[in-house]
Length: 102
Image (tube, rainbow, N blue to C red; front, side, top):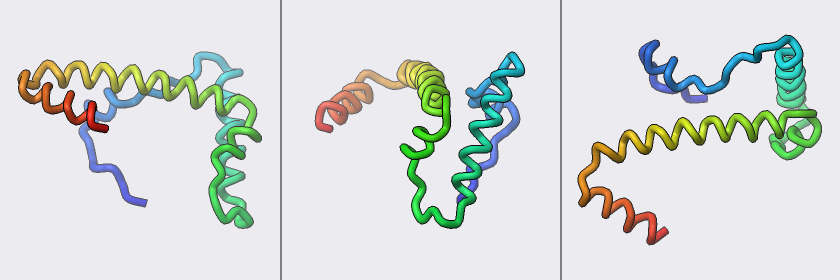
């Protein structure tokens, strides 16, 4: 599996979205979900990874994933907003046209 390019500690800290749970129950739930997913992934009988099966068979995983994606979406939106302020009007028009075409 290819590795991500190395980053400085400051960059990697900014991009971390997952926060550690504040209480023991949440930590136990995450630990249980991780164990379930790793158990599935390590099963030699599985020829393909079926994400829907993992979501269906791991209690709470789908809800955790939805929340994770929402948090990640907010961070990405903020980064896009910051980047847009650096673009010229012409560049913004080009991006708009590309989005319209797709």
